[in-house]
Length: 115
Length: 118
Image (cartoon, rainbow over all chains, first blue to last red; front, side):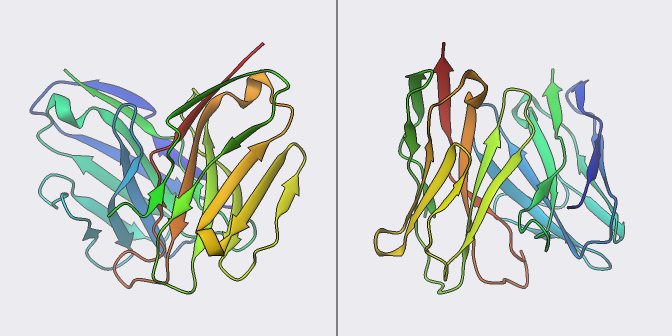
């Protein structure tokens, strides 16, 4: 199955600043997904990133706040912009279904704290 | 509307007890996929199983077993002879038919926190 390297693993940021999270996949994948997991909550899809096209955002998430890049088939970034304490969450990237294991592979997550 | 419901927020059992985690889903698609993931305290998501809508066979993997019943839209997960290392949050998730915008993105339930004590 695919292996995803996600960076940083954690960060503490000042409000009003931005943080860019990177996900590198060891194989080419069509779609990458970005999720947010607020403290004690489930995972919510932020957006889907296809290579060569604009990311598709779910309701409640906007590009100005969460710009996404997908420059090639193995890499994507999510930026959390103009952060507030409400953005404190775990952010995870994922790739579409692995044909071998049939499961979605997730990055190890970025634990973000905004102070 | 919530597509995946995990009614049990927290479960606490003593080691060696059997425990069943419930999952009820809602979809209009005839083709869909159901998943279970484990999230230990370290935070990573560990894939446990995928089931497609056309395969209602129950599955057993070691101490883990899954019961998929389309008639009741349920995909329950049983841990036999639970161990302390099973303590984690368990998520049930649904992937519906291909959507050109979000592909096969997962819809997660709210999760069940399982605590296994010695």
